[in-house]
Every structure is written in C-alpha cells, then in structure tokens.
Length: 201
Image (cartoon, rainbow, N blue to C red; front, side, top):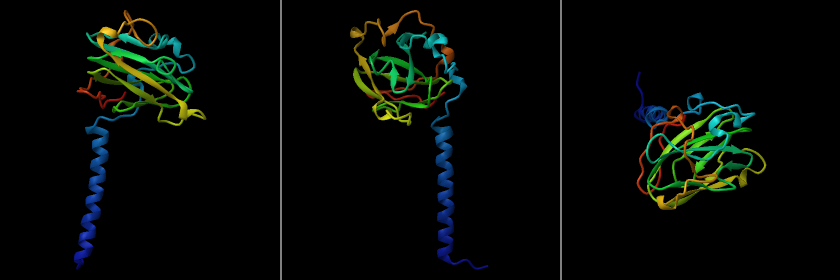
C-alpha cells in the first residue's frame, strides 16, 4: 500500500508527540521524584491532630542531626500554624524538613520563590526537605482552593542568621522534641535559593 509522503510525515510527527508525552509523564513520576501524599510521611487523626505528639504544639524542633530542624505545620481554614499569626523562624545554614497536615480540608503549602510545594491532606502528613543557606524571607501560600477565604491564606518563613536564632517561643526551635527520622525524607541541596527534595511523602 502506498502512503503519501506528507501522510508519513504526519504519522511520524504524531507518534513522536505521543512518545514525548509518555516520556514527560514518566520523568515527572519517576525521574523528578514527584509523588502523591500518602501514609509514608505519617498519619494523624484529622478530627484531633493534637493527639499526635509532634502536632500537639506545631512549630520548629531540633532534628536528630546537627543543623537539622523539623518544622511541623498545620494548615487549616484559613491560616498556617505556625506561619500566619507568627512567622516560622529557622536559622540559615540549616537543613529543614517540613511536616504538613490539615485538620479540615485539602490545602496547599508553598514556599514562594522555591520549589517547596506540597498538599496538606487531612489525616496524612506530607514531608519535604530543603536546605537554607542564606538569611531571607519567604511567603507561604495555599495553592489549593480551600474555601471562601482561600485568597487570604498566607504566612511567612524567616531565615535568620544563626546568631539571631534564639530557639525559644512559638515558631522557633524547641529542644528535646520528639521529631524522629521515621518521618523524614532525603535532603536536597541549595545555594542561595532553597530547593526542596523532589520526594514528597
């Protein structure tokens, strides 16, 4: 059967687009390490998140390794705890693992200007790790529609010089916290702009 030259070109082009699409999806799912929020990051009772030891007082906790901190954040209509009423404060030159959950509906947790971006799903704990090398300030936004005041759900992350990090009070580090490595993911590296690991549990 004779196939016209232009038909062959269209056929090759269409097949190439299909292969490119499949390759892009495969890279996003496997190569880049993106994943859905599931139980591997931990689970909490969405009706009573305070029953979970680490979410009883959300905030910044010293991790198991030097210069590693665990930040426990509860996203709820329509604020981040901590983050909205008081900023999250972490020291520069540190590795930070964010543990995010929600007691009500699905929210987003995005640190503006970085690739830290995950969903806060009721009952599940999403974890994402990044390194912050330099002092700076970042906005927190919810990028999943969560209700009538979704547009006003925002907060702030402050990366301060280590000498200015006192490690006391809400939103700052609390020593002796019960943050364990069971809820952590591997860390990503950054220079001046923090980037998160691609793994989101």
